[in-house]
Image 1 (cartoon, rainbow, N blue to C red):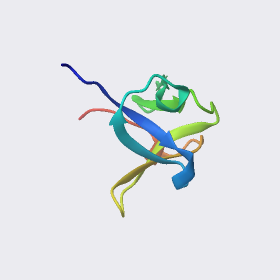
Image 2: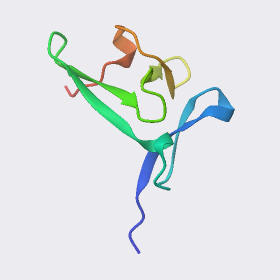
Image 3: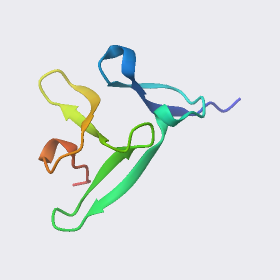
Image 4: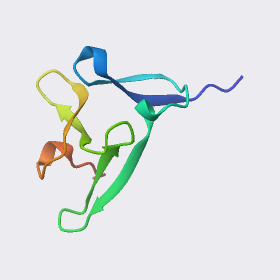
Length: 78
């Protein structure tokens, strides 16, 4: 059986984003917004459109925080 995994916002853990089996709710929905000036993508949460996927490079964690024009919310490939 094929199982899908999703990035889910976990509000009970301070908006930590966790990888889990998909359950089909808004906590795992993300909108892709292309930022042409940076040639990168920002992911906005379906759960709360004011939250964006962000990275904490010190702890290696993903979390959702208020969207802003900051590099740790921009994603791309190199």
